[in-house]
Image (cartoon, rainbow, N blue to C red; front, side, top):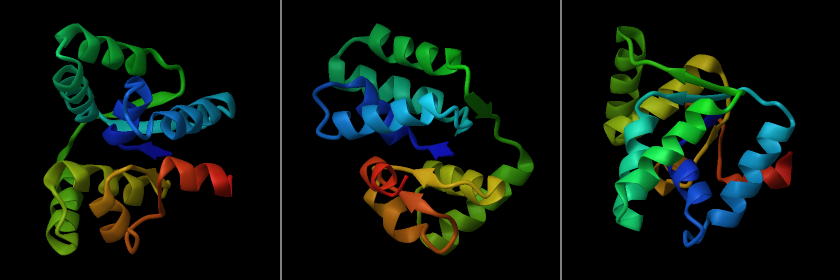
Length: 140
């Protein structure tokens, strides 16, 4: 299961409008011992997004440390193969580069992608199975 940074950010920020669904989805995934895959790119994305929203650098870094410590998380480094696939997806699906990395992981690993990003939800469906946390919870 590929988890986009947007879901992790919502999971950690109680003020986020998607907090409950993100928290529930990640909790169910962990309880069922799903293997969760993220690119290492998620670390700075999550840290920066949380720090910007809370105003506290330590909040962002603490969230990343929690993610990295989770037993069922696999963090994937960017290599040439993943970068090439992400570049192809970014150009053909007109996605931001970072978003294309998550879609490329989903396509490469043949795993569903869970995201709150509207563009990814709309543009990646022909490449990978894509859900919001709420949609995934309803179907699983």
